[in-house]
Amino acid sequence: MNTPKLGVNIDHIATLRQARGVGYPSPIKAAVECEQAGAEGITLHLREDRRHIQDADVYQIKEQITIPMNLEMAATSEMLDIARDVKPEWVCLVPEKRQELTTEGGLDVLGQEPWIEEVVTSLKEAGCQVSLFIDPDVTQIDAAIRIHADAIEIHTGAYAEAGLENNSEAEAKELNRIIAAVKHVQSTNNDLLVNAGHGLTRDNVYKIAKIDGINELNIGHALIADALFMGLSDAVVAMKNAMAGQS
Ligand code: PXP
Image (cartoon, rainbow, N blue to C red):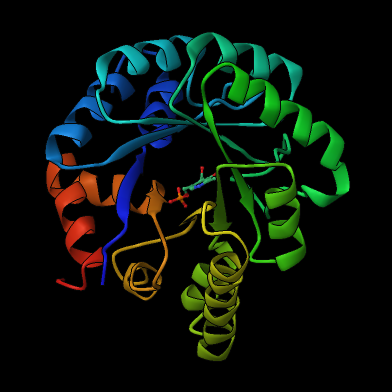
């Protein structure tokens, strides 16, 4: 088994900072520490309401890390301008609703294909690779392939939620949807990278990590929560061990 890479989402370091409106804890320092501990990517979501990550964080993290930066953002003209200026290695397009606690559901690529294609093309022209955060749905995957996305990130939220509710039937069903989605990519387009993320924890990550064909997992909330008790570096190492089935 090829263990996927770990991308650490550091949004919630900024959530803690914004709770007080002070300068700490620093998401920049966190990103550097994650890299030193073995993270293979840093993910951050610049939301339209700037509830956690701020514009300056995006620029500074890009300067301070040597591993790829994955900027999650809504497909809006404002975000497109920022991404084209920062030029992160990766941009992940996500749906965004003001009131949501976190990203609910995947991006509807199919329903807005011409616009998403325009955004993908523009980001690629600026030198970024583009990933689309979608549900494990073959019609969305086919749309992502048609508009030449470099990667998809499969939304694992429904799988994670079923596990939290101890609903093993729903968990198995969601896992099978994810496995089928990865197989669909493998049988259709070998160039499209498949990432996954949302709601992953040390307890539920292995079943996703061991799916053949997953390139990277993006994990935030549970890893930052672990960091409160074990420290950030150890939380990164512990998640990598859990991904490898060594917990
Ligand atoms: N991937 C995407 C596209 C996301 O929007 C998020 C949440 O910001 C994550 C991964 C990480 O999810 P979590 O914080 O639940 O690990």
